Length: 221
Image (cartoon, rainbow, N blue to C red; front, side):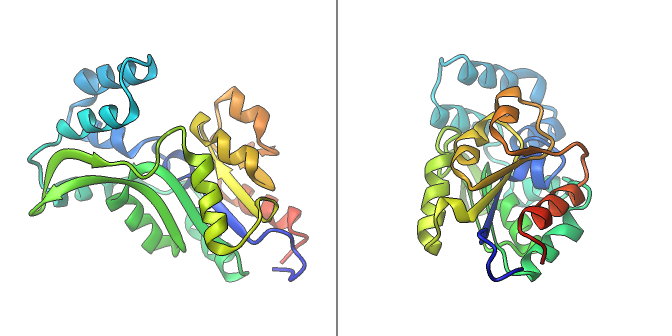
């Protein structure tokens, strides 16, 4: 990376951005045959403002109560990365970008993503477990409406300004951090509100386009 490049850190969303499936929560529900039932009902209640985010996540997690964490991890091992991610991320790291992610997904899945892709840090939510089993409770580190504040906390942790950070995002919940970034890229972005916020909206579903755009705006590596 050019030492004079103004961008120092990239903050990614995970579900639907680095990975193909839009939600690790939904993926687990689908794999267990729980999606078309209470899971959709709880989602509707949250979207409609009938329940808060913590309650929504606890209700979701309660559907898995008593299941082994190992079982759920095994299910999420099936989630594939977006095309080109495996090639692009190591290149971005090699040229000197600090790579982080903010996700409303689950830590046992984002830990896999962090380790396999070599990300520096990932913030996500936790399932409460006991002796290897899910209790049905959650610890919320990333509220759907709080990604902007977490974005700022990551910048503070690494001593960077907003203009030194890029975001790569895909959904409405990413708008707060996309608005604050020095440059934002939409990937797999189908939400019109986010589409109006990002500086560039990828035309393909191959992460190589993200890499090429970062190369372009950074003045080459």
